[in-house]
Length: 390
Image (cartoon, rainbow, N blue to C red; front, side, top):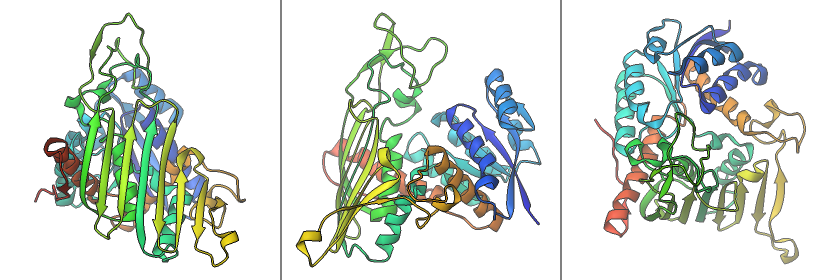
């Protein structure tokens, strides 16, 4: 018998819509699942957005008060896709209501809030999940498989960067993403993904040292709306950008791997260049999200003429690919990663077992972010220590 899982989504912007579409796709893609999502209610403080989301995405009803999502007995799981500054309040309320939670990253505005969110969910005994969707790329999963099988030998080097151009236009509006009262800048935004993937691929971190810079220090003020993709003009009134555009981190991992992580939101050239390169004693690999359906791998060869990188294209032999396409080279897209994410979350709820990545993994990311913040102040290496709240 198929187990029905009632879903409520809070926040119907781009990410809320993406999550909602993902739930609709779960049974289309994972036909062997013994559970089925039911889109019960969507919530947004803008009534027109909530109403339109209900109409287009198939929710049974909508509301402008997120508390009504948590009080609905038909809702078993809650998706939180509102601005970062609202995450902790809603996480605490959802946990107290006994709802399982999928929260977009970063879980908190800062590491301390992420620790408090993890505490609330842990003490309530609810299942959690986090929107670290890049984990689910078939090529990334295959890279993890090669590492676990020892095909690359002992890992030695890890280099990652997440360069996105979404804020490269100096007339991009001063949305909440650029204001410290709403949280960290690029370290909290794209840095959450970069640190999580480093943990998945290379392992936990021992110590870090980081630097930061804000290149565009003023931006046009919003005029009653807009997102971090919206653009104003040169004559518009401006306000100060109060968090970081760029962050660079040197990393020493617990297993001896040495690495670097860079992230920037104002860089010109790359559009969404999220990449990692990994070296081991028996081989190497590299992957770039802009070409997410391929990966370059090298295995040490006794024949010098054949010792070099080879290109592997995603296909049914790689994790998750066959759920979407029957042949190699028929690529997946961003929304497909969110569908895998939704499936993995619902599977953990249906089985009553905490899956990964949950709030524990988000807390591990927060631990690194807090250590990076300390290094900004001390200008020296800082040990990665726990921010867990008991």
